Length: 189
Ligand code: GAR
Picture 1: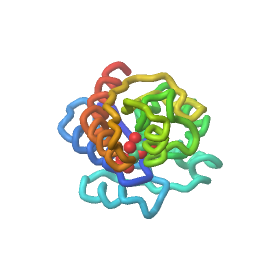
Picture 2: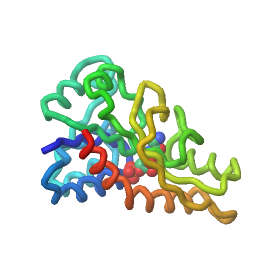
Picture 3: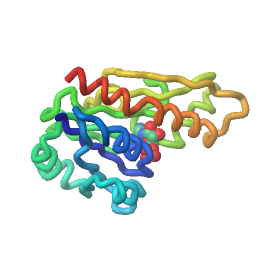
């Protein structure tokens, strides 16, 4: 059995979808949800999903070994960032080499980097006049949104799109593809 830990700090629609997808998987399971925001809606979501949540702060994450030790205690095979915005510190990347992946709501290398998340990404895509956007799932390295690409899927951006309507298209791609990409990735570990 391979153990997945999800990091999320927002609404958690991806976290919920991934948890539900792996419920009936005989090879992989989600063992915990790690969250850095006590008010994040994802914490409400996981309550009903029988998935333990671990709340941590910046000190736990970057200045101590608390998060790392918890990950090791859970025998984590893969860390999935699903709407998580902090940079992952070097000690965690070193402990899980190539085993931290992230989803970004645009077609990297466009519209990535520090501060590019959620609605800001969709606003940038529309402001740039791009005709398509999409999702990118990639390995995480020490630089924001620059790790090796694993998967992309795209959608059209039409002249009448708003950041909200584009967010819905991206959300649909995330729901359709993210869990299956994680499963395939785990099969290759
Ligand atoms: C998702 O759209 C994800 O791609 C994005 O945050 C959203 C989280 O939604 N991630 C980033 O922007 C990372 N730079 P959710 O909390 O409902 O899963």
